[in-house]
Image (cartoon, rainbow, N blue to C red; front, side, top):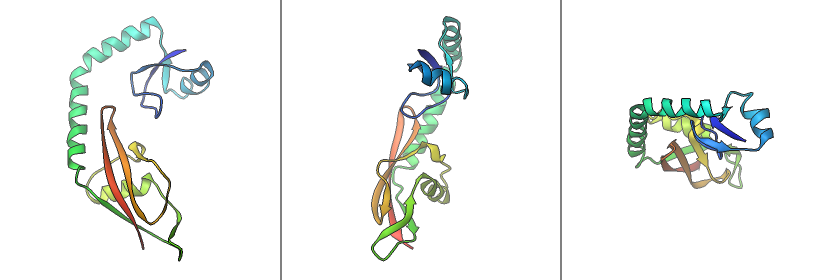
Amino acid sequence: MKIILKEDITNLGYKDDVVEVKNGYGRNYLIPQGKAVIATPSALKMLAEDQKQRAHKLAKIKADAEALAASLEGVALTISTKVSATGTIFGSVNSIQIAEALEKLGHNIDRKVIAIKEAVKEVGSYTATLKLHKEVSVEVPFEVVAE
C-alpha cells in the first residue's frame, strides 16, 4: 500500500515522502498513530500543492541544518561514566548522554536524531551520527572515560 508520511520515520522515510509499505504495517500502526495517511489521488494533489508553497521554508530549514553541521564539525565530546574494575561500563552510553553533553557545549540537539552504530559498553573512542536533515548529517566523535 502507498502512504504519505506525516513525520520522519527511521529506516522508512522522511516527512512528505510517498512510500510503499505492507498493508498491516500501514493500517495497524502508521495510520492509527497519525504518522501517515493513505496516498489517494486527492491526498497526492494536496501534498504537491503544500510542497510548492513550502519550498522556500524547506530551503531555510536545510540551510539551518547545514549551519548547525558546520558548527558541530570540530566538536569532540568526553563522557565520563562509572566503570568496573575490568573496564566495562555499568549500563551503556546512549543518545541521551550524548545530547546532554552537546547541550553543555551550547548545541541543543534532539536525542532522536542521534544514532550510535555499536553498543557503547566499554571505555574508548566512538562515533555518533547526527541526522539533522534528510540531506545533512554529521559525525561527532566522543570518548568514554572512567568517572
